[in-house]
Amino acid sequence: MNIKISTFIGVALSLLLLHACAALNTDYELPQQHPPDAEVGNRRPICTKCHDPIGEQIVFKQFDHTAYFAENHRQVAYQQSQVCFLCHQESSCNDCHGVRVELKPSLKNQTDNFRRTPHRGDYISRHRIDGRTDPSSCYRCHGNPKTSESCVRCHA
Image 1 (cartoon, rainbow, N blue to C red):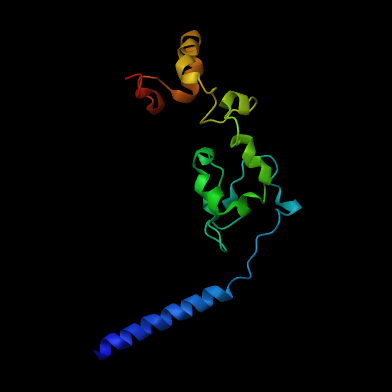
Image 2: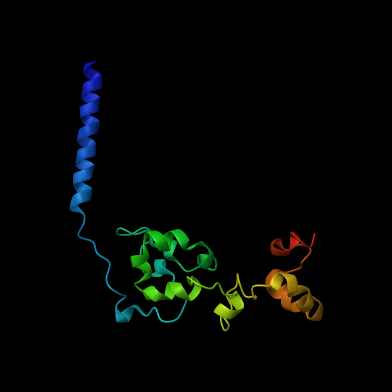
């Protein structure tokens, strides 16, 4: 019985100490924006080029704008939007996430060519025209439609 009480007291004191340390470490605040000498520019930002992958209070690795970032940024942007606002305006979310009318990718991003979504919204039903006209244009990104992961579901 004595061991149970001492174990409980030890765990309770450890939790209390941990909570006190966390409460004292609230002085970290994100800056309003990157400093001018950060040279982020218009390139795709890879946060971990300057920040530790797991640094300060933020896991910067999850903010690296890799080829799949646009598809997977939902939770990160929702939970830590203040990090997004270091580079992006709050209104930039509405460019893709409009609240009224959903636009096809071809209308949203007429000049952009993201590797994962370079085609217009109805392209799956229309891609055979391009495939027959100029198959090499498909091969550059997709490879052989008989063996490529992105094509094999339909072209097996």
